[in-house]
Length: 213
Image (cartoon, rainbow, N blue to C red; front, side, top):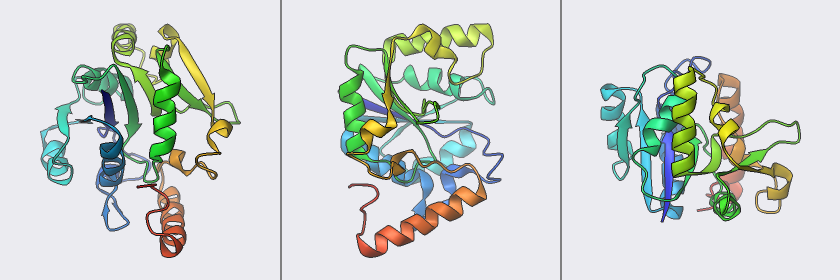
């Protein structure tokens, strides 16, 4: 069984609006992530910040199971810990709600590469990691998140200190996703504008190409 977890409870300070509800390609942004993950996994869990956000998103992604963040405003470690407690699969793909071009073939490969490890996490050529576009072992990661919360460490990388991680160079994944658009996330209005240009460019010539559905 494969599971997926979307962290949607962030404050979206740089973008200025709730990322999950931003209109993109005619649908709320979170819909695209959920639709991609629905094809590849047996269970989808979405972590929200409060009841109000739940009421809004549950109508957009009715097939998902929703849970409110255990420590509101604490950051992705708390959201990850909350979501993992609801996961049934041994391995779970974890993502933010701001990835409109998720590539299901890349995610499938990460599930394969995670076998025998606590996590399979992509790394960029600049040495950055992509912890919110990665596959984790549910049990070991849940324990690692609990340790981080007890230490008061909010960094999303904090749980990784206690995990056996298989780091996957993003360049290795270009054979599947030549432009690595699966990692394109939206943090600013400039990111959103660029993503919309890409969507227009590709969907006009080859509909749905970007999401590989």
